[in-house]
Figure 1: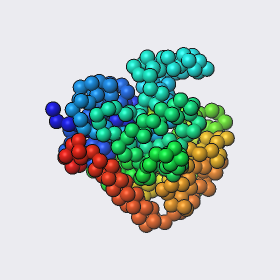
Figure 2: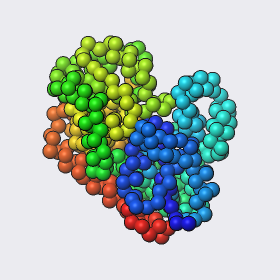
Figure 3: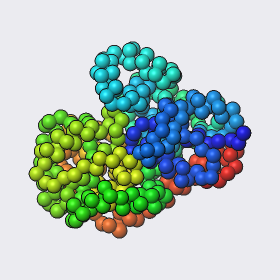
Figure 4: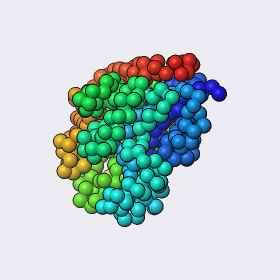
Length: 401
C-alpha cells in the first residue's frame, strides 16, 4: 500500500478555522494521498469541510505502512478530552450534559474518555509510532493554566514529533522554556486568499451574498461573537456600540456564526442582539465555510471574537479587530497573542466592547497598501514554513506538494 499523509485536526466539528485548516492542507499537499482524521467519524462536506474519519480507525488501517501525520493547526495544546468530546455532540445534547457534569471532574473525565475511546488528556495531539509527526502553526497560549498531568502529556507528545511550529510568541516561549525547539510561523489561514480565493469568489456571487451587497450598497461590517457575550448587559453594550459604529462608518451590519459546535456561537444571541439594534442589520444564516469566507472578504471591516475571522480579514488586507470579554482586559488570549505576533502596530488587537467604535475607526484608517503588503508577507512566510515542515516527511512519502 502507498504511504499516506494523515491530516489530523479538530475539523470533525463545525468551527470556521478548523474547517479552513483542512482545505489549506488539501491545496498544499496535492497530489499526495490524503486522509482526514479527527476524533469522530463525520462528513462535513455539506458545510465546506471534509469527510473525516476517526484517527484510531485510520491508524489501524494504514499506520503500519508509514507516511506522515500532520497536525494541521489550531489551539490544540489546550483542548482537553472533556472539551473535545462535548464539542463533538449536537448542541441540544451537549447543553444538558455540560450542565449536569459541570462540577463533577471525575465524572467528566470518565464520560469523555469513554466517548472518545481514549485515555488521552489532550486528544487532538497524537504521537503514533511508525509515522513522522508534524505540528503546523499550532497554539497553546493557555497551556500553563491546564492541570499538571495534561501539561506533561502535551510536552511529552511534542518531544516525539519530527517538527513543531507554533503561531504565536507566547506558545513559542512556553515551549522553549520546556526545552522544545519550535519555529514561529503564521496560522495556515493566512493562505486563504492566496490558495483558496477562486472558490471564495464563486461563493461571493451566490444569491445570499449578492442580496447583502444590494441591501448595503455602502458596505457592511462583518460581525461575529461567541456565546460568551450573550448576557443581557453585554448585548446591550454591543447594541449601543454597533449602532454608533454604523452611524460613523455608514455601513450596515451583517452577523455570521464562525462555529456552530457547542461553546461556539449561539444563534439565539444574535437574534437577541438584532432586536436591540436601531441600525439596519442582517444575518448570514449559512454555515458553509466558503460563504463565511466570502462574507468576510467582501466586508469593509471584520469585528468579532473569532481569531480566524481576523486572520481571513488579514489575508484579504481588510481592517480587523477582536472583541474582548468583559473583565478579561489584559488577560492573554489566542487572539491577542496572534495580533501581537503578526499584525501591524496600528491595527487594534483585542478591545473591550465600550472601545469598539474608536477602535473600528482606527482600524479602518490604517493604510491600505500597508495592509496589502502585510498580507503578502504573511502568506509567503506561512507557505515557506509549511513547505519546510513538509520537507521532513519526504523520507516517508517522496511526492512533493
